[in-house]
Length: 130
Image 1 (cartoon, rainbow, N blue to C red):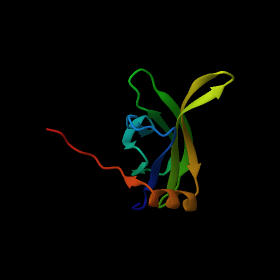
Image 2: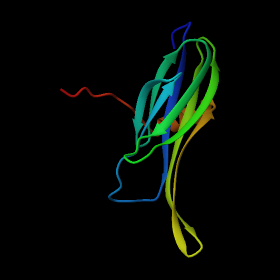
Image 3: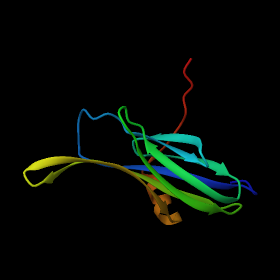
């Protein structure tokens, strides 16, 4: 980040059952109520923010309903803040039946964890459609 700004990075990971015909999972992330970008299937993106206290949120883009999580952090100039967007989409056995577990969690990461995860993820890019 260029001072006096800070940077916030959102890294999406998937915890899901293996599936040959499953659709892609897209999450989007916001800072202080403004959508900053989106991730699809194990990717990440970064955005700059002003120093100070910020609220961040993420949601899982679904056709019928959404899963949402929120967090907060205080940004300092020149610092980088990492958040894991963990999506869970699994079928769990409960007694004799199966139950769908779907959630999205926003988890603060330290530098080492984040850099390791980013090595195994794609950078999200935007495409303009005409």
